[in-house]
Length: 176
Image (cartoon, rainbow, N blue to C red; front, side, top):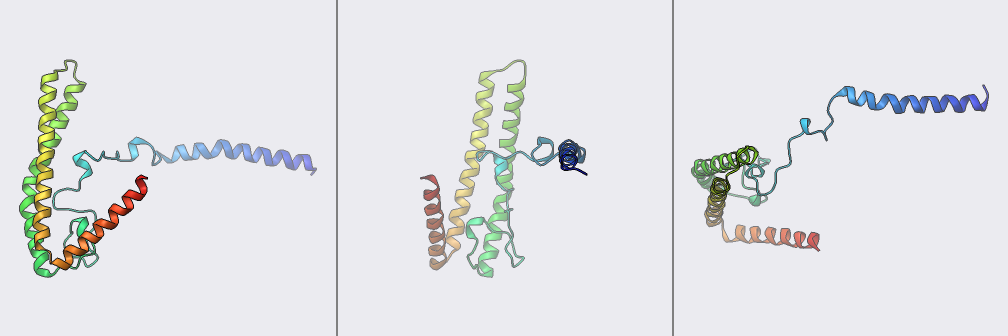
């Protein structure tokens, strides 16, 4: 074979690959960047961005009870863990009620916006209900945080503040 024939064979193979590869990918099904195959990214103000009441993204490596993320790295005694569990268990129904209220108000607001007859007064009421539910959830979280802080020893509180200082320092570096 001559050099020209080798060149044409290489070009043909590259062209065939350029045609076949996309077809093979399409035959495989939706990719990760297609909306049907991936969940939407929740907005920070969306209640869906929060973990469900009483549940957090990571359980401690010891296999114990999941803790709020800001307590990660603190060694809690068994008595502290029991009190923390009781506090979180006590608050979960209230938090769930507020979460359901927020979701319902937002769903109703979206339905109203998509309807043929938009009522601004009704939309305002629904938006206020959504905001009130989120406000109540923020208050519940703040109350739980205060109660959790009261369970900690002075040394554990110091560790908690040191961790928060490091996080704030990192955040200030990324903002500038």
